[in-house]
Length: 296
Ligand SMILES: [Zn+2]
Ligand SMILES: [Zn+2]
Image 1 (spheres, protein in one colour):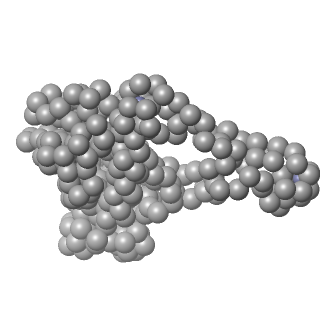
Image 2: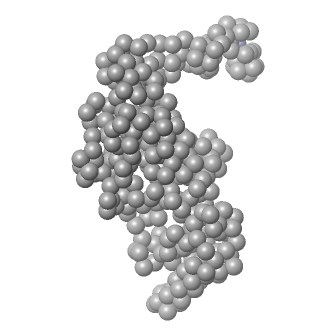
Image 3: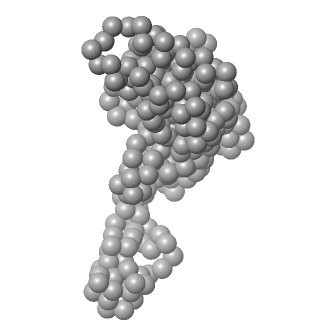
């Protein structure tokens, strides 16, 4: 049974309350024939928020699994997807902000679990300390406001709902949030007078408030679909994917093994059929430019 036969016409639940189905549903429908539904009253924020009120338990994949299990239990649907994002400053990208998006598909009936990924620096992820509305507005403009929303907090580590305003998408809302939180700080008792004067502002990373992130969720979904459409040559199960990458492509100049990719090993998670495919980049020798002997 191939991917189209396996999924066509089946219901698939998307574990989201942040409108991720807007980009996920059309792709799953078009490429796999899946009919996407979303769970009613699903609170994905209970599994962790980017803004700090609820910290995420476990790694990205574990978080996606927990969320997905809940949505599948709630709806009784045998196939579902959940996506999970993470943001940070990555040394690989010279300290630039990086977004890693993961999307997990579980098919209980076929006992299949496949994960799509994307990691790149296409993100507006940023935060700053501000002292007044003008500074807050300047920050907001720099991250793509008002198409992208911002969050204002009483201080950097604020966790209480009363100490933050999320999903701000207009200048009026921003002004109100800044004024209210500053006033609140000035009337509250504190020895830390200096700290009282400033607020914390950050990008709202929730999908429906962040079109740049939504685009990456779409890319991760495309990666998931590519993996699902890759079928095992032995049993035709979807999700026949690369499980090992081997370095060691010989140098065209001196013949020594280099750090360039020599082979990809594919494994079927259903029947465990495995094969090593040599020269995945279409070349049998690497350019001496990438050789540590020829080009130290
Ligand atoms: Zn197989
Ligand atoms: Zn060489």
